[in-house]
Length: 291
Image 1: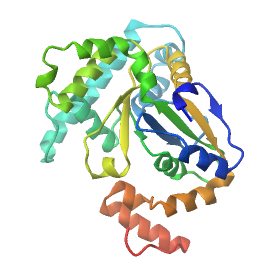
Image 2: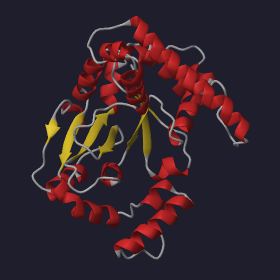
Image 3: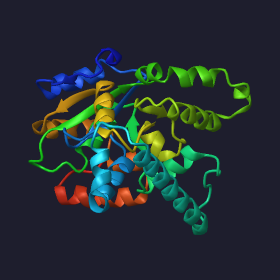
Image 4: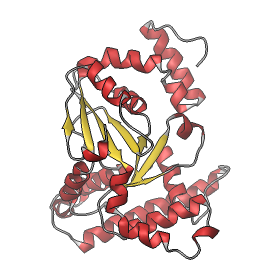
């Protein structure tokens, strides 16, 4: 299965076995997966949702602009200004908390990752190289009776095609050989944001334990302020959505357990281990000797 040739499709397997075999027989190092516990959820970052929620509460005119397909430089500038303000506030206060190994001031991606990790709104979205890790996240928090889930699939090659100008400019950079990987990623994201393409920009996060366990890849949402319906539509046309039936949940959980996927193995912290022990005990689930 070459997912790059199935962009814009909605795939509806007939059974969990068909669905699992589909993922086991496809993929590759260019393919990214994202699980949603609600089939109707859009491909949007938390920052995009928060900006819209703010407009719903405080500025109906701005909300109308954001929900239209028309461009509006004033609203677009407002969104960028608010993003900068929120990021700078996080940076200033994180420095006061004696947190070790904070990102360098120039490392915009590093600060966005740290904000994302701690629940602050950013234009990042979490993806993974493993379809079954993505399915675990679709299951996590899904409540009985809330409907089908979704697995979104996005191929890096699709992103490359839609950011060719940035790639070409990046390739011609005279100082490219002098920059480390983190500097290179920041440089490319800056160029891609100038492309004005709504295609999501994949980046590799810093390899701390959780990112390694989750096989994480991040995407940057290039546009966050205006013409939102058009951006959502284009993003969905550049990815593939697989419908995951709610009735498959027992089989999905069994598959995830057989692969050793659980909250403590994916989050790699003691809080997750404690919650896992409590949940397993109350549900009567036998816990493995070692995770």
